[in-house]
Length: 155
Picture: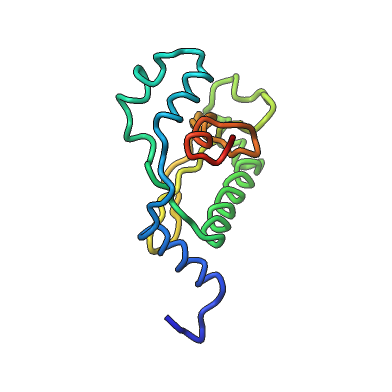
């Protein structure tokens, strides 16, 4: 793998690929996830009702991505948000949108979801959700999340 044209970002990409292929060391503790979700919901049957029937929604292992992939995704999000603020875009969209859409309701969206698929050609945006989930899987720096607790990253 010694390529004289290789950059440090190539090495990071290679490392993230290797981790995705070979690292199964961090697994989801489903019991801890359920305990945390049930505590947050105040419902001891939350997991039985909502999580166990859809167990496929939580991966048992993480996906590793390179700093370059993160930067590519951030560039796409930045471009979309810039376009959405452009007056010509807003005029075009608001021309057919309901009246309530013309009112500024404050934040652009606390749970905006930009869904990317990762592949050999890098991350590709597949959809934007304005009602995205994930409030219970935010990083530890934003509070103890159920998913972070279940991965053993927050205590």
